[in-house]
Amino acid sequence: MLGQQFYHETIRKVIVGFGTTFNNIQLVRKDSSGNVAQSMKVPLAYGPREKFLVRLRADPDLGSKVAVTLPRIGFEIQNLSYDPTRKLNRVQKFKKVKGATSRELDTQFMPVPYNLSIQLYVMAKQSDDALQIVEQILPYFQPDYTITINDMADMGIKRDVPIILNGISYEDNYQGDFDQRRALIYTLDFTAKFYLYGPVTSTGVIKTAIVDQYTDMPDKSPTREQRYTVKPDPFSADADDDFGFNETTSFFQDAKELNPVTGDDE
Image 1 (cartoon, rainbow, N blue to C red):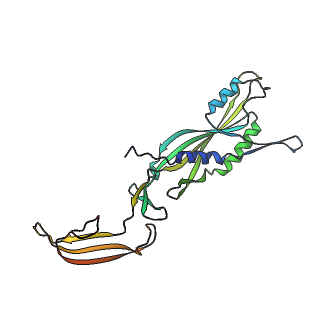
Image 2: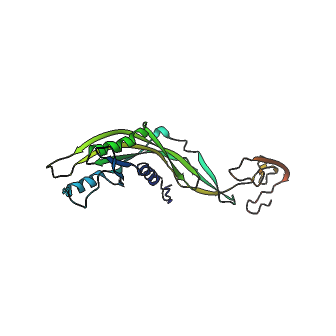
Image 3: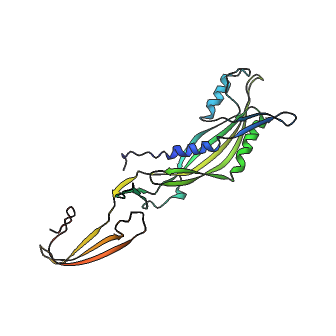
């Protein structure tokens, strides 16, 4: 079982899809007359929240031209857990004809359900900026928002991944003197429900099945009675086509056996 190398990038696709969902949030600031004074796209980054907080504390100079830009959005993985409530039949398989020649069939067992816990945080130094960003996110989660990822390109599988909003917390990370930078933090906890896939196995397509029946006698050379042959109809059908079967029965009175390599009776 273990030792066969495969990597479908499923978790990576879920993380990229999650980040893309929040990658185009706009922030608008207005003056006292209600006119737009500034418009900006809120930067998004993958990384732990503490990384940015340490950067803020290490650079307390409010007048510095080089500093962490606020507001900003960040997210990171918190947990990965198995979800038994979405378990599929483990013996069923996906099947797909490999290439245009249809001489090989790709098969893959049903995927395994997992939940990915992701924490997204909104950091801002002004309360109105943080509220404006949060209000652009929350209406889309009731409590879930569904994205579609190309799960298995080789098998032609696309799957919807629901992203569920579990809760929101607020923190005002303002300590010390007035000359230190302030950070308002809204933390949103999400759960992405997805599936992990095992390796893909390639096998040849069976187009002819032959069964020989022999007389049940205590003899060293039993007599062959009949042969049962099954072929697809039409014979040129692919493995994923809708086709029937041709069944043929032949009768014999000999002790020969079919050689599966040459196809001759010996």
